[in-house]
Image 1 (cartoon, rainbow, N blue to C red):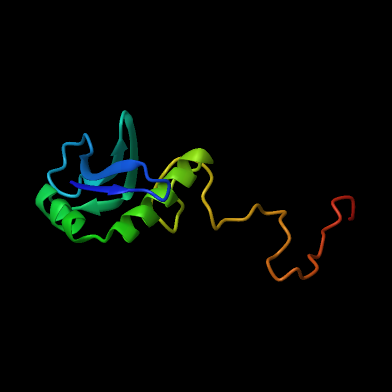
Image 2 (cartoon, rainbow, N blue to C red; image 1 turned 30 degrees about the vertical axis):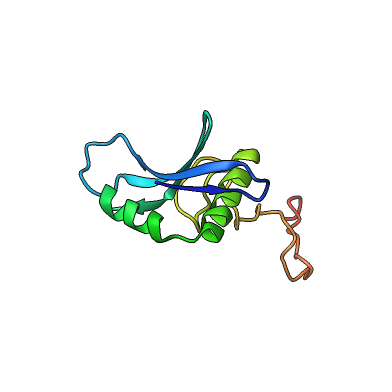
Length: 116
């Protein structure tokens, strides 16, 4: 576990959380705790608790703040981890609805449902 402060001066602890599963490996993940609040980042996983602790102890505060900012934004939007980040509940970022305008703003040919 590693203590650090966020961009607002709030104290946080980055720690290794454990998923409740019968698996022996790959069940440890990154979690942030401050007071009674716990925010999980389950897409960051480790094979063992020891490897997770080792990584946390070498992580820069800047990196911890960046990851905390990401998981807080995700929780605020009620949006789980995207397909780019791992599995999670909610709407995946990076996926556009089928009727959305393409990113290059090109005209989208429309099919006339009443034709033929």
